[in-house]
Image (cartoon, rainbow, N blue to C red; front, side, top):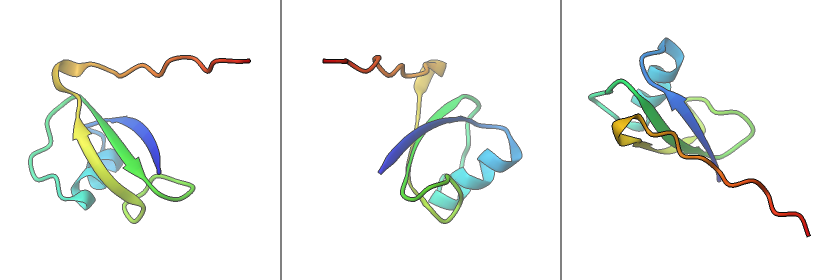
Length: 64
């Protein structure tokens, strides 16, 4: 499963969020999880709104 952050109020992104079952789309960022190579309406498995517009930062990879 892969994770990606998308911004709402874009036609393609709203279509993806509606495919997972979100009825009321708020402006801001959403964290979505999906299976497969590309994020589209058929591969999305979950979505969660990032409140207050926070973008979650992924820590840099640790090299050993």
